[in-house]
Length: 458
Image 1 (cartoon, rainbow, N blue to C red):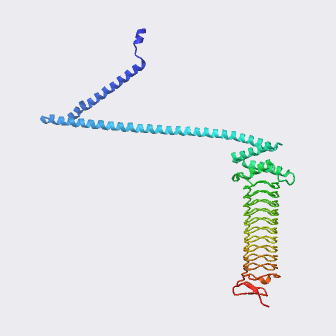
Image 2 (cartoon, rainbow, N blue to C red):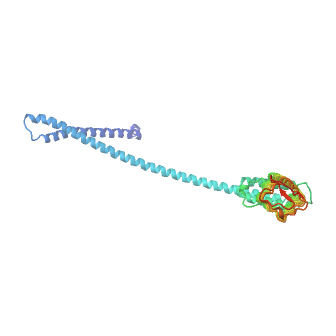
């Protein structure tokens, strides 16, 4: 028994032998069928085709009929093989298409699962990051209330990093820093030039923030920011109502659209600052440095700008009703279409300034130096401009109704189209003033052929 078992071939070998036998049997069967079709069957077909013939011709026709029968059998076999090949190809193509569709569905499912996994991972990371940011924010806010200055500084820098890392938390961080500035600055001792380090750090973080992430204006109303370094500060649209900025350095700062009503800017440096559209009603800007500043369209009603440096500043379209510019330097300033009704400009320097179309009703300009002033079309009705220097000024088309120009200097000034008969002229010197056709010359003066005015000989 044991020896017989050992002599039996292994299963794999028996399987290989079976396949060989099956293939051999199939080959024999195919050969047998072909032999039958090409000879016995062809002979039967040929015999059937020539059964009506007899004699010597039968043998000849039988050979021809046998060849023809074999040809037909071969054609039939070729057709069957072609049909089989077509059926096989079609089935193979259909199976391939089904496999391709299955592969596509499998791939889509894998991609969907990958996306879901990625989204789940992202949500998990976001939740973790949010938790970390919240923890960092709470710890930083707690540090702001610490008594140690270095810990407060650490909290300020931490909040600034949070705002930079998370735009979503930017508004909350800015509000926290603004609240810290308001609280800390208002508890500062009297007028001192030394700025607390934490206050300066908090304001620095506020003014260099990414303004694009803001969701509201900075609220710094009533804050004491005097003598702070705010060069290039981003304070557009900020609420600085009643804020104290005396002596602060706001060079090149952006304060466009900001609210500075009743703010104290005495002695502040605002060289090249942008204040377009800002509100400064009642603001204190006495002796403030504003050379080249942009205040176009600003609200300056009642503002105190006495002695301010406004050389070459842009003040076009400002509303400065009742504003005080006494002894201010407005050399080369642009005041086109400005509303300076009842404004005080006594002793102001207006050399080469532009006041075309401006309104100066009942304004006071006594002793102002306005040499080469360009004020064509300005309204000076009821204005007091006694002892004012208007040498080579352009006052063409101005409304001087009831204006007081007593003692004013108008040598070589242009007065085209001006009615000088309604002006208070006591001590007025119109010598060499130019009044082209259309101007009304007061009594005692006459126009020369070249348009210059001269006293009429008595």
